[in-house]
Length: 525
Image (tube, rainbow, N blue to C red; front, side, top):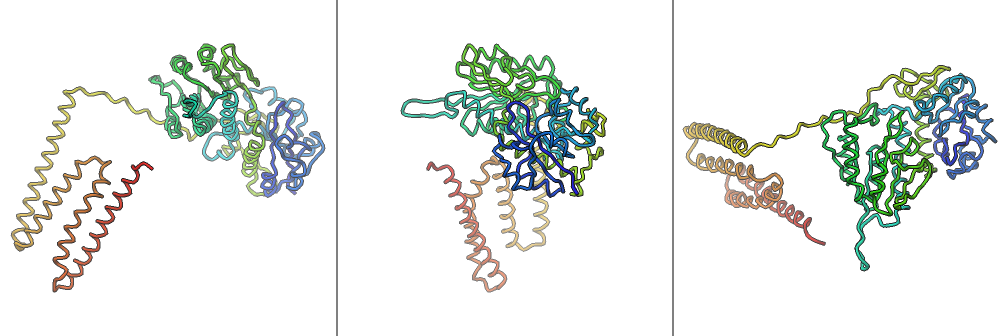
């Protein structure tokens, strides 16, 4: 018989998510586990007890029944001290833990002598673990929701409009940090028609930002310690880099309508990136949405969990429950992450988990094992590697440019001369053995290839397609020649001539069709 997996109701204030949904329940049961959930645990996410019963989940009356009767307990938020005291010896706990910030909680859990405590916030950021990455799942939702909250507080259009009553400019949005949350915010803001700019200490993400239609704010800073990644997460930047960074933001502040900050460093308070001076420089009615509010905030005026309005009418939103505000979607994604973790823990699909400490993913998220603290885990080599910075191109002087072009011209002339000499020698050798009629046609063929090559070679690559489409009409010369030979008494010559007419005709008409389609692309509808 499989072990029992229990899900208690979340006790944190304002938390609407639940660690199990009816859909993920069916998939977990296929792994051999029996499921039970506290009554009302899914109400805030619109999952009623009856829906869970229909999915084969046993509904228990209270949290005490869940903690005492479950071999594995799954939660969303870190357990409170009261919940930690209910952990059954030999059982397992899976939830967010934040062990670096909650040493007392980890110590309390250790004293309960559980089989294992697995922290969803400690999943290594490697390719194989993406399906378990609950931080990314929640950050994706938080980034989207941040734009929704910004729009709700902004009070004006995001997209620009031209109406009979006048012109409305589009909103200008600055997204600081281009991780999962930042990219989600960029996508949502761009889809609403805003002009989006973004900054990240990792220059290698510029391509991702620009591919989503946003402008990457490049900071010209040569210090190699400016920023980067550490274990797949952003690492602290140097003081010199930070000073340049703040100068950039100060220049942007008067022009920006909405700022969304997402910068977090694991195990540390959130860095202050949007100062009080910048908030004062923003236009009345502007909005700052701080997704790092739970860890202290990126904005100096952020109040954790609250929305405030400054004396210059700038709204600063410090909500810490962005993902929870979309409870049904968040629960589904988080539940899927948990289901994938149970799948990795249960390779035999027999309802008996195996906390394999040799597995780099399971080892990474295990903070307590058999009553012993195993945090922090050994470092993991990640797939996130910054691109090598290309050396700056040195501008050449006019004299250097002239000398380089002369050398290239001389080199090209030497190559052409050598080809002409070799070609002439071959023609002379061939002329001694081939009939005069053949040589006459062969010389025309060689000259045609030579002239055609140099004509096409000197045309810009972007013009090759229209050039070839038009010059396909030259194939009419082939048709004329083939028609002259098609009445030949030699059957082989006649067949080849007929094939030449067919292929040249396809070439001509195909070329004109291509040209017609290209011209249609530039016609105004």
